[in-house]
Length: 162
Image 1: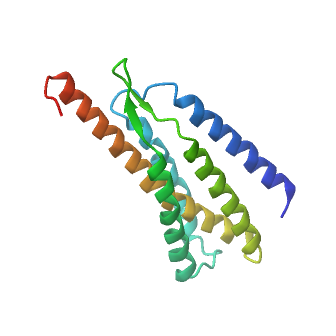
Image 2: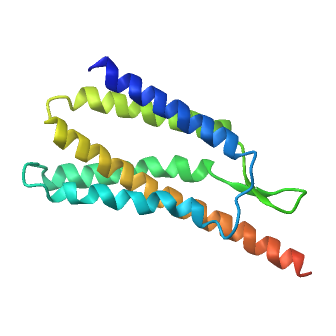
């Protein structure tokens, strides 16, 4: 495994973790649609699935998607929101989330070494499928959790105790 891609990935993970930690100090604004923004970027990589130069088997695609879905479960479980004293909704700080992110990165590095015999383009597409399969359910579940807290806050503000 080359050192440069690993170094780039470590830097990106550092930025993601830093952003996540800093985001917990700021409220989620509006209707929470910002939580779904990554879903608008994901389709940009989708045409690669139909690239005739890639020779992915159905089994590889299905296993990648299933693995991604499995990886989304801890992400969903560690993503929560709370209403604070100022009445706004914030992400809950979670050390478990950081552990989950680091574990996912370690799994990705392990898989990259294990699947090193694959063509780099095929490997990249499999990792794209894995990422899409965990980002989509994670972001949708996070949005649903946010909206649930927001709905409860509205009812409480209108004088309907829960």
